[in-house]
Length: 264
Figure (cartoon, rainbow, N blue to C red):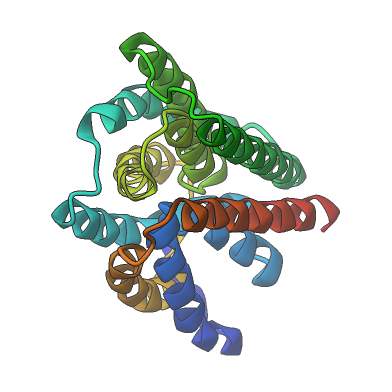
């Protein structure tokens, strides 16, 4: 069901919040959904199931604009991304069904645990990548191994998208990083995968969920501007050390959000 909530004073700062999320979402390959849900559920006290579908709808414009920007810059690996998309669609529909059979508290706790697990996976993966580069080990992977990783992380991403409304960014990033794809290609490809997963998750939630368009308008008015700026900023990231710092920063943010979702 689509509805418009009454405008609260705090809503007027949401365009600024959206600008920051749109900017970092396109720089980090996430589309912003990972940050929309905690803001809606923890700060604005939006009912969790409504926050999930509203977060998904607010994420769509960022994904569209960000994907187009990265595509123009050649930052999308269509072959790798297609592996994630095929299984991610199935996961999105399964996740949407899960959302409607668990409680709001279970949803928050599950999201917190998921955030922590993915953050630690990303930290370990980045550390291993750095060690392998230092030892000059071969980073090439077989086609079979890439398909296996893409299928596993893609299904997980779809489940997360449908269940939590966060666009499943973290598993997509973790999977692409594990394939030894350059950072810029990881970010662009992730946004493409997130866009498709989010579209199908919105479709799955549409009949059962409640979308607050008032919140969508306020959030996306700023996030669209940020998503236009993001791909240009990413072009300035040129060194391996810079790539690793981006990964560690993203993992740190996930840990903080995961802890907050668990304790509140």
